Length: 142
Image 1: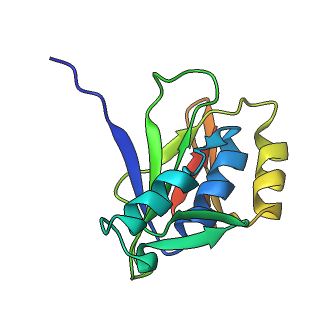
Image 2: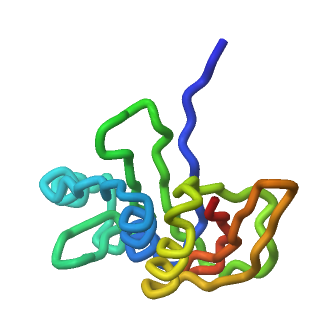
């Protein structure tokens, strides 16, 4: 039996981090259903404290998701609000395959938007660059 899944990333600023990753990957931030949120609050299923405003839009405070723009078979990424900052190295990370001809320009583009360069790596003919997103989560460009 095969199961579907989403990838959940803990974050102190889930909406901003979702924006960053959507831009980095060329994906889309899932739109907020403001009418649904207002109805949940008015019916007592949620509190105003469960909401916030991001880029002028009412959103759930606890998280924000992004999706591949064209293919729903890709896993959804959910950026989930947590109170503590990241403190240690990831035990799992994403390898973002941009292509050897684009790796330097992607490094430049992503560091200009808040990524941090960590190091270059290689194994035989394979090369990659390890960076972090704006909250310190590692990822590799290859």
